[in-house]
Length: 191
Image 1: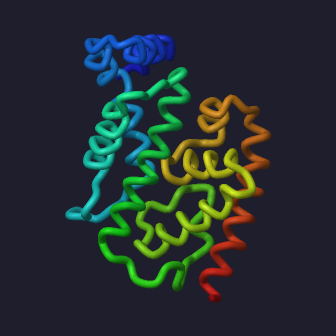
Image 2: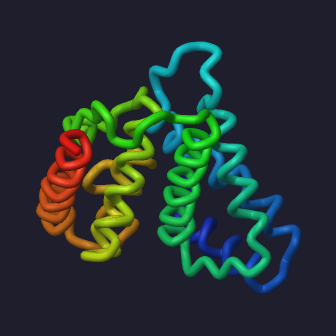
């Protein structure tokens, strides 16, 4: 399927914001493929029978996105940034429900490599979430970047587009975020 023009997505989002219910039906085919790619990047390589698969993550994220009665998406980039946050919340909520043991015990900081880890253990997901909360006190922009890169599986270039930043800035900030998270996760693993 060819990627729809970005204006089509933005137009549908603005129409939904204005109260056009039909625009929601027209949005689904425009964003589904991208949401599926984001979920696949996050969950690819999971074993058959895993509790959360790509399709389930897409459907849960989409339901959360369209169920927001006051959603005011500015444009396509904003929509996909919110989708990345929703995917993070779903994965973390699922990990919490599955009763992960000690948070951070045995966490592998290399989990935040350039290629997002795809089969992180539950305690790792929870430890990363805690580290992101701490990082949020320093920089919400870095948190958003990690959500887009790690939880949504976006590339440096895609992240730059979504965040309306230069790819060099994203690359530099990504290195900073990884270093700060490495330090936080190493502290959790040692404590």
